[in-house]
Amino acid sequence: MTYDWDGFLNLLILLLEGAKLTVMIFFLTLIFSIPLGLIVAFGRMSKSWIIREPVKIYILLMRGTPLILQIALVYFGPYYLLPEGMKINLDRFAAAVAACTLNYAAYFAEIYRGGIQSIPKGQYEAAEVLGFSKIQTFMRIILPQVVKRILPPMSNEIITLVKDTALVQTIGISELFRVATVQSSAKSSTIPLAVAGIYYLIMNWVVTEFLQRAEKKLDYYR
Amino acid sequence: MIMLEVKGLHKSFDSNKVLNDISFKVEKGEVVAVIGPSGSGKSTLLRCLTLLERVDRGTIVVAGDEMVRTNSENYAVYAPESSLKKIRLRMGMVFQDYNLFPHFSVLRNITEAPIHVARISKEEAEERAFELLKKMGLEDKADAYPYQLSGGQSQRVAIARALAMNPDILFFDEPTSALDPELTGEVLKVMRTLAEERMTMVVVTHEMGFAREVADRVIFMDKGQIVEEGKPQVVLCNPSNDRTRAFIKGLSER
Ligand SMILES: Nc1ncnc2c1ncn2[C@@H]1O[C@H](COP(=O)(O)OP(=O)(O)OP(=O)(O)O)[C@@H](O)[C@H]1O
Ligand SMILES: [Mg+2]
Image (cartoon, rainbow over all chains, first blue to last red; front, side):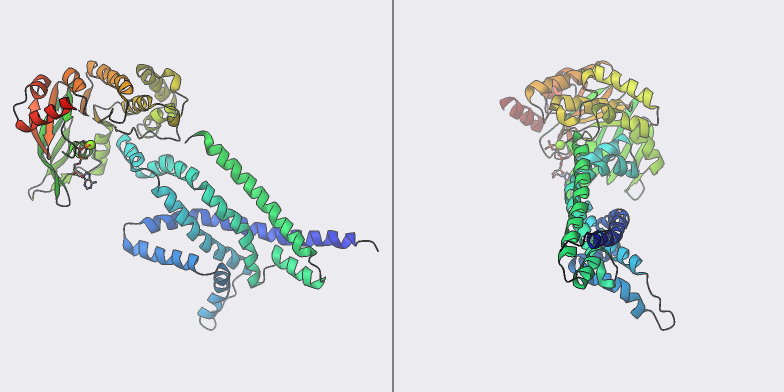
């Protein structure tokens, strides 16, 4: 008996289709949550409690409940909450990206906050005396130093995000993991799952390589 | 011409009265040394003068421009932000721990503000930066990063960075306190050169030698007040106030 190579090739392609969705959700989540996290971080550090306290609750909710639950809520929530006649069905994909973005922005915000607060006060004062505006001080003096300091913890989160995308299958998105489980039960085989595992590994290898290069690039100062 | 005029300055942190009715003047080209025991308010005074802290009451005039005055209800009223911005540009500050920007090269540390605040061209800013580096004896360090510099070199870069904005008056807060004795000399030498060029300077320092030889006037502060003020020979060698005498005696016995 010869191995069904055609079937295997088919499987690789099917899983690649799923991986495409995984990659899209990954990138879109990053693109939205990286800047949103900065806004959340500023809110969290605001002097006014009217801003700070709600942001604290938001961060608590996002970090204190499972992402899989948040994905389900963002997708199904609006349908149940809206009055009869105004019911809309959110696009699955948009809901998944929105939920992941909201979740990761909370984690990123806390990393940013730690980074921003670790910059010595003297940096702000030196900049102020030289006449830099508040925005210039942040963009030219503080932010570049923050980026260097937060890169290692950010790398951790970003690698986790690659794997967390698997959770969006809960609302029926055919991303890599869902395709793999469907194939696995259809063929009564664990090979699809193993291949999916290798796909995730390859994605994270690329991500790690990229992040390490970024870290190296910032090695020029201490 | 009077470069800096301070009248009746008061500043408290909560109930802690840190500056209590401080008044003095600095003429253009004058070097004033501020001495006094730890906690007497020297740093706070410089921070109020450079707008890093706000005073509760008092008047500060920089080269004829009023930065803050006291209104009829005895509260400090600051000039509008647009005026403060201009006044800020006339003052430079050198900190005890340098506060160089670690992610910028030495050259960029010096040129960043001239380019993005004073908005002069990059070429002009760099030309001036090289001149200043030469003056500081650091021509070969333009491309170095702050972590590669010794303390003395860092402080000289910080002085160059402040000078690059062409301030009318330069404040120093214990510029050599973080340095070993050998490195202190190289920073003091640069400050001496600036004094010879008639740069207006207010220097908080524990270096009595520097105060004696370079300063035109010495101000002795204690508990938020100016206790004694005058020529270095008088304040440092023959003080009339008991507290000054005790402080100077304590220093020489160390
Ligand atoms: N931001 C602040 N908040 C509260 N108290 C402060 C603050 N800054 C300074 N102080 C207090 O003000 C007083 C004077 O401090 P300051 O740093 O001006 O003294 P100094 O003369 O510079 O002392 P040193 O020689 O040790 O540098 C001290 O009692 C200090 O605790
Ligand atoms: Mg001090």
